[in-house]
Image (tube, rainbow over all chains, first blue to last red; front, side):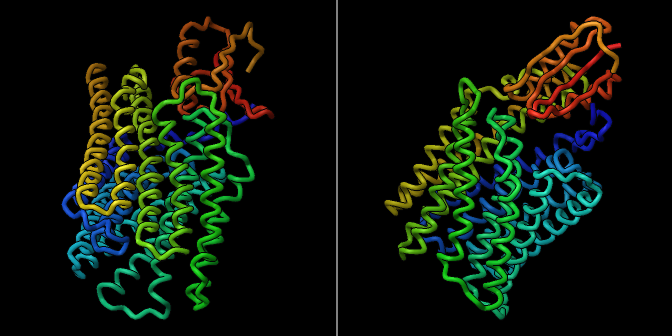
Length: 424
Length: 76
């Protein structure tokens, strides 16, 4: 037999409160996005309104980025064998810089303030530089070569590319920086790297492990896990080089392969989930299915938006990909990961942990996820009817949805704390 | 690991974490001295191995050709 002496990644597991503080702060950005929409319903008039840009960055640089960085602090040591140096001060620094940066960036878009945009870009850039530096140092010491470890590295490259392009855009907008390439394609590349190169690659790398483990499905096909993320990196790299060298691709041509890769990942995940061995799929399972269906719908709307010059299609694509795809997937994963971490930390401390269903009861989770699905429908409805009343309602639902998510996660923390206290 | 006097097998495949861990711990609590517990799993149970290692419990694991992970715990 082999492997019993292998170094176990869980030795390097950071304290429970480190990823948790990122997850909880992230939900506040979701609440903020909802309140923003409630009081600025004109944000949904088109994807280019200052409000829409502020809203998008509250979700992407606020909710998504914070949860993903928090999850990576947990995942990198366990899955990729990377021991993040000085994890506590790094986490505090990254958390502070990214949170304030995301707030400042959103404020800069909303108020049209160049100073706030620059401060936001600088703070976010500083936070990501700190995170990436620590992750690279940790990964250099790692000997792990599994697919997930490699794909996490690819996601980090995607994050770096997104950040560099974002900072260039901030400098163009706030200081009139003259670039030797066109502004429009730069925005498209920033979005493509952010959603596919960073968010998509991280979602896929996490899914290779989490979907079979928690949703009791067969493993992903080896050909897909072997080639998907490197292909994403190659396609985005080639697209970027092509655009920056002045050979601007037609938008449909540049978008076609990334959309096809998104569809391939989503369809494979849906196919695996249909073959689950779970007798009764729970709410988190259904939400993950919703996420994959929304990624497919979002990819389709993106293609239609390129072919038809109507404000609705890019908005629908954004709502489906961000709220329907990423927020659904992240929420479903948080509901699996947070109680599992609570259970794991109790068990490692030799404390008899309550059943997972006690750490996170089904009912509040199911109700919150149902509200999430209703909110998605309300957002799409508001984009269709383009009426302020409908948008305000959708905004209120978004705020409620994220507030409820925070309350459910805090409930798990409370039960974890009580169990520790009872154990002395 | 020496040949065990007798073996108990717990098939924890197809279960959501941490159920396989809990099943293993229940089975270990009832395991007579010298007996070996064989766990069948879908993947390497890192948290369980970490705790077995910490507690000085004898254990070994291997990944079979069909992808099933076999963990042997206990024994003389």
